Image (cartoon, rainbow, N blue to C red):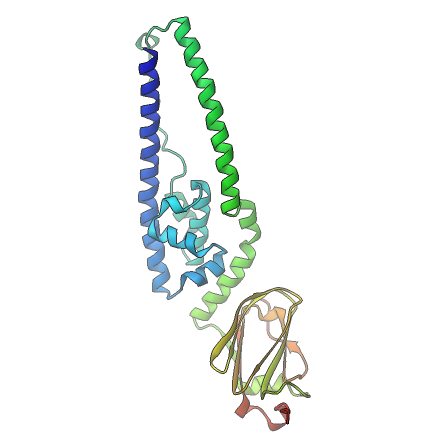
Length: 292
């Protein structure tokens, strides 16, 4: 009788766990298809999504392809789905709730004591012993799994700390895509550097000082020289032979000087701005002296 009870208990538990995993895999597949379609419709790469959400590319790809075994525990996977959906301009809470992390509640049925088999004291002793051993093993595995998950992915508290940074970069990407970038003309860039002195050995040079964290992109003579987030206190210099394009996601946190001119605030906080500097359109007095 006891052996049959143990067998029934293991069989029921295994079937229940398998059903939960199958449901999660099915929901994840549906979520991944919708997120990928939204990303491709907006012509956004996985690398750009990773930059916005601070989620590694292989985890984003696992979500899109419905690879449940490549993702962390369900509660952390739910958080990754929420951040990915929000970066695409979707309802992150709705996508997260669609992914189940707990089994659906079932109605309780009344069981009469007469339906239970009559157990002898020896049977009860064996059952309690088995229950204690099973509980200890389950608790050990659960603690080990939790520690492993903390090493694999970011905890919810860390995700909240990174939320402001992700929101800033997402705002920059959306503003650029919707063509809401306030572009400086070459003449406006020349006014920003009226007092010019000696510079480098190339006709165009910008000195940039970051008063606050900002995402930036720099193109030198048609090639991307740098793209990423630079922290407050960073000082960088870029030079070009013919043309230099400077794009900042937080113009209010950037001080820029053209050809060693007077450094001025690039724009308002949180505003995306771009400046295009061409060597043949700068004033003659603004061109730097080249080395002999």
